[in-house]
Image (cartoon, rainbow, N blue to C red):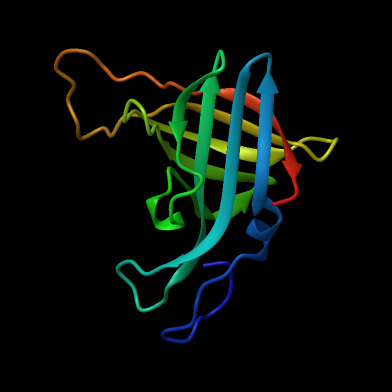
Length: 149
């Protein structure tokens, strides 16, 4: 991974994720979305823990609260960013806190240094849906500005 050998127990790091950490906001009329991204360490099926980004969000639509989670401990995150940043894009997996729908997408920076958020519904191929499919309650495309914490 990453062309480097890691010693047993050594944390696998990717500094490219560092630039994504922080607090971001998107506003459109009375709709507001706040995203907080922080690094965390996870250990899974190997001797080496690895860093990833965990995110929480708040969302209000037409001035009404849809979901509030940024004050919860980061372990209760709604978003996980993978190990690698490919082509300046961080692949993310998102769990809608309101509907429970799953999404996959990416985060990237545009030429103005703002964060591009792009997700699409993503179902686990091992799950067969019977009845109504859960929809996403958040915008699937946004440009967010970084703000001081």
